[in-house]
Length: 114
Image 1 (cartoon, rainbow, N blue to C red):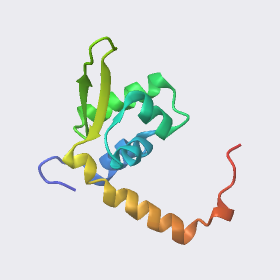
Image 2 (cartoon, one colour):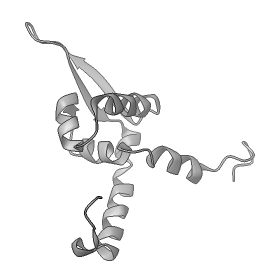
Image 3 (tube, rainbow, N blue to C red):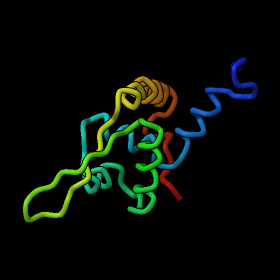
Image 4 (cartoon, helix red, strand yellow):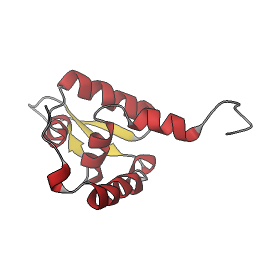
């Protein structure tokens, strides 16, 4: 616990952010490089556009991702998302989850969603 902010627990706060549905899927997809909104939606899979927009805005507010707009003559503007340095630091979290899953959750152990 921090003495500067009594009651603040960084682990509790981080889990609160990372447990939000789709957040780690978004981060994982962006670890492979920048993506436009539609490309990101396909990479994440199953997330509706309203929820994806909300999660992206939240991650941008937390400075884990950055958004830029690409304008092309005769085309609609395209939003492109990339991880910030803080977002890229989540690679170690993803790697830790991967290592744990490979050790404890074999492919046969994963039940199909109901």
